[in-house]
Amino acid sequence: MNREGSTNNGAGYALDISIDGTKVLVHDCKINGAMNTKSYGVATKTLTAAPNAIIRFEVEQSVVSIEPYQR
Image (spheres, one colour):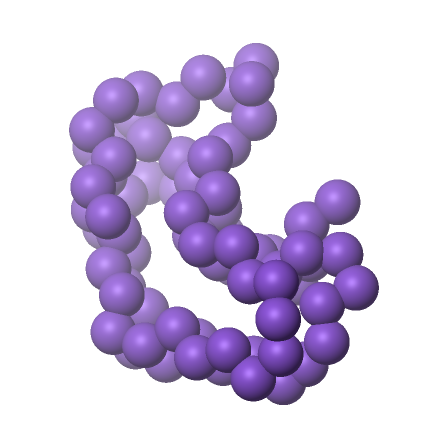
């Protein structure tokens, strides 16, 4: 995924990968972004059952997070 435009903080951060299931594997993903971009890289939706796994997830931007759940 490539993020080239700046992030509008008033609208909130973008969400790149949203998990809404169980036994989901996110493998070998990369997010590239400009210095003024911010996002949530991976998040699970509310009440998503585990287990889920994220393996070899690489990020090249100033701010990115992996969130345990999305409200």
